Amino acid sequence: MVSMTKRQKRKTAEKGLNRKLLYGVVLATLITLAALVTYYLFFQPHTENWAAAIIDQVTIKSDLFNKDFNDTATSIFNVSGFDVKYYPSDDVTVDFYKDLPSKGGKIIILRVHSSVRNESDFVDLFTSELHNKEKEIRYSAEYGNQLSVAEFLITGDRYFAIGPTFVNFSVRGRFDSSCVVVLMGCDSLNKTSMAEALIGRGAKVVIGWTRSVELEETDESTLDLLQCLLAEDPYTIQGAVKKVNETSHYPYRTSLDYYPKKAGSYVVPTRENETSLYLMKVSFQVLLLVTLAKWKRDSVDVF
Image: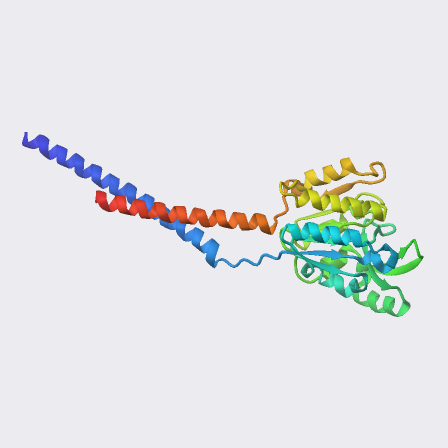
């Protein structure tokens, strides 16, 4: 009888020890999780850049300025919480492109003429700097084949243009890792050289045209693209590009494409969505702390 009582006490003691060990493990796990969440929310630096840029080099010819495009694009951005920066044609110089990553955060719209350089796979982006011999000598010495001279066919004027090697070697800084770059000009994704260079500079995805495109066409389609990407229930990059191509008024001339293909499932973040996510994280932290307090109280009762 005495022996039975000792065995029962031993089993009870072992059970209590196992329960203490279990509570200890759970307690340590919850403390670690709470510490990680607290660090992420309140101590890890967040430098979100909610700027969207519209770079309007096309307006080197004043009658190509499109107030409706600018107003509508700005409105779409504002609704999603973006601060819009507009850069007119006069700003778009070689030096301007050097600091391109700093011009916008999550989205950069380049309403810029582009072309495929003769006898190469280089896609060049026009500046608004008219070509002259003095600059050509200076730029050739400084940049070599990073620049080209491109002709604006409507007027016959010639402008300096930057190529992908300029982005690789002369551009300063890096794009926001979630940045979407929209190239509105002709042949901007006929070859992937410029897109590859922009991705190499940190951009998430580049969207552009596979062949030549009319200005009215690219203005309309870019607005449709922004509506899809920044909708309340946003499309993925792949879904938005597909939607624009399906509803285009010019389906047989050209089409939008994107690079790299692995970014097809990406959804553009908006300030509104990020705020909701932050609140969810805070709620999760509060839940963890409440659970932690309950487990601690229960463990004290058991011990």
